[in-house]
Length: 429
Ligand SMILES: *Cc1c(COP(=O)(O)O)cnc(C)c1O
Image (cartoon, rainbow, N blue to C red):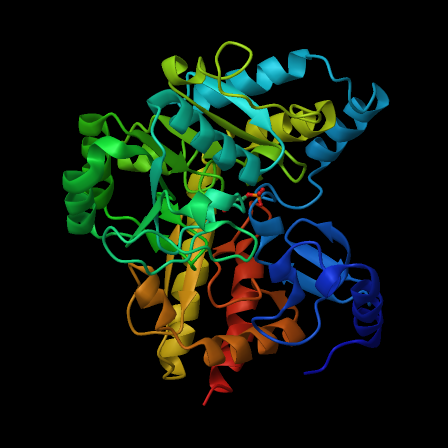
């Protein structure tokens, strides 16, 4: 693997003072091997590493960069806000505007609270659901990632009614014994679980489009059943749209599936690259939050004025007519082109897309569950990844992550990517 010396030098240096040299694990390239690139700047659909090598970026900061990197309007909003002070610890009008915008775009959200990360959003939504229902048990699905709060870091693969084991060291068994892990897209298993313990379940939390086990779409039947069972049993349905929100459609996955969740977690796009996330939903449930109710939740930097300025400006840009249709056409152009290139090279490969999100699978069929995702050929992905990286295309450094396009990804950029991928496919054995 050819890596430039400056990236190597920085990686070695970083590892002296930071565990693994990175501040979030997947950046370390452990899954694909090799040396992570240290990024110096980004513009539009590209970023440049410390060696001034340009990469077409298909992770967009794992979702936030939906309007392209360093969009002039977003940068200006941040600069203008910064001049007026960085943080006050007191309310601002910007927070109201942000809340109004979110409630307008996602109608299931009647009230919303701003936080600083997706982890905080899902963790708080979970606490709220438990406080509201006065129940402890929760249901999550294998392969869905909801941030790194204790109750949600549960090993996938548990069968029906098997209580989870923690995925992470440091999470007490006592915490996760309340977490039931079921199979994604397994409607019957969901029915059976509710029949057995439905009245004890505080909430079901789901990524309505899963983006943390590569891209896996939920079936309409699966989500409809989930909605029906939650209503029947007084269980709070939480859609974790931290990734899918404002990305698969302006109104999120829920607008595509026509489902009204009780609570929704948002993040990534709503900060436009700065730390903003949110959770919200039914007013009746949100009223249980402090200072109105008994469920405590707080944050020194929640609704930070600079972050809100970036988020609000991003939300304005994505409301430009045709924005999401163009984004979807871009993602489809990429997945169609890659699929054709793989076919020409006789490589077992398929791809899927929804809005500005896509999945690449070194497998014959599009997966619908974690087990199916795991059947993909990881070695082939890794070879493909490194070939493209050397050629100046930056895919997510793992076979099990989704990819993202932005409004700055022009047809010419997509076509260049496909041409480079042709070479990469040809080199796979
Ligand atoms: C990224 C992500 C999170 C966690 O958000 P952070 O801001 O990284 O804490 C939670 N849920 C989903 C679906 C995500 O994609």
